[in-house]
Length: 99
Image (cartoon, rainbow, N blue to C red; front, side, top):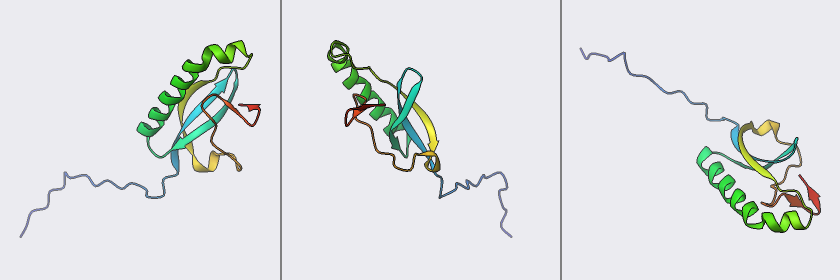
């Protein structure tokens, strides 16, 4: 008779996990989801790129009187995304509208 090792753990991950990583753009107290990713590494990479873009254009944004967005990460569920959500460009404005 074969022995069964009962100390092995079985990982039961939910396949329909709707948790995503959001790159959040903030101006003061107002924030908006800039982009979403399935994994944290991709979100960190995007946040780093967006931060570099803002730093490169920060002087231009300030001279033209435009706000400079700050970026952060946050877990988000797919159901928490706004219904008509669209990704936000790196510098924080879209079609003349700011975050």
